[in-house]
Image 1 (tube, rainbow, N blue to C red):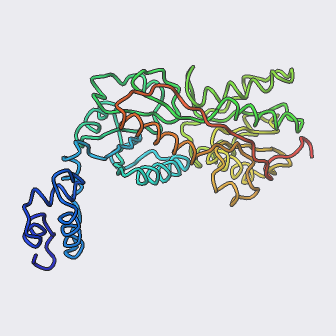
Image 2: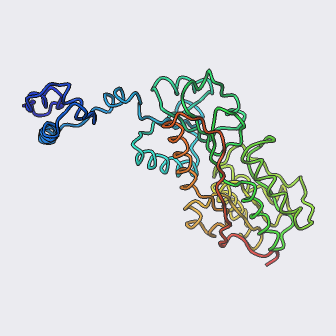
Image 3: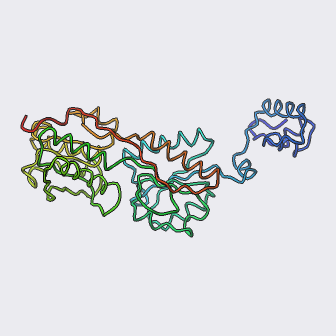
Length: 346
């Protein structure tokens, strides 16, 4: 019998069952071809009685798979991961789905794209998910960087053939938000978000936003773009406080993320403006926070859980079949009307 407190080994089980270590190994790793049913039952019973817990590393070696999936997120520095409330929700859903599939999550912050190679290979990852990276960063991934590791990028519009993708319909979401404000009579609508290039999530939302104006034959003023340094509550708060000074004609704001929109609302209120009587505000994500702020936030709901589940299933299918999935999957969106929007001039 093993000493109390010591990890039970295959040798302990073999000695108790009167069989070889190889026989025990075959049983615990489900290699039953050369083991009789009676021996299998005896080995399993004794293993359970002794409290044997299989070694994850040993099973990984036997299967030639680490069962590890890396989740790589940008890091602002040594002490800070750049995880927005949206991405926090994604992490929880991704971990849950991986666990259901028998895989483990390894979270790694990346301060420089050059660290991706180390992250992918130092832990012998079976696959990796990129969350929060810019399209130009995903574009820079090469075969030398990713090696044999399957990679999926969430919320990416990159055409990199080495990555698959899962994202929301950002264009349609912003179009729905802008059309909602237009139907309420708003014409001086500020588009608030981080700076963007000709591709990516924010660009898609900007194009969808402008398309809504074109749909109803209303010209939108390109000067009504309010750029923030980051999609945070603090940036939204600062923007809300200066909004009516920089854009006094504003009657509504579309922010590219809920956390930014909530900051805008707080900033407007602290500056003496009323939301929605003076300025209506719409966000994007439909985080739980939208129900807890005053006024409750009108927003574009994206299927965060569905996006995470789809991403994980795409990646695991690629890992387990050895194929390279490159097609992107786009999840649907919908507008959720709450108290932060009202007809213009109400």
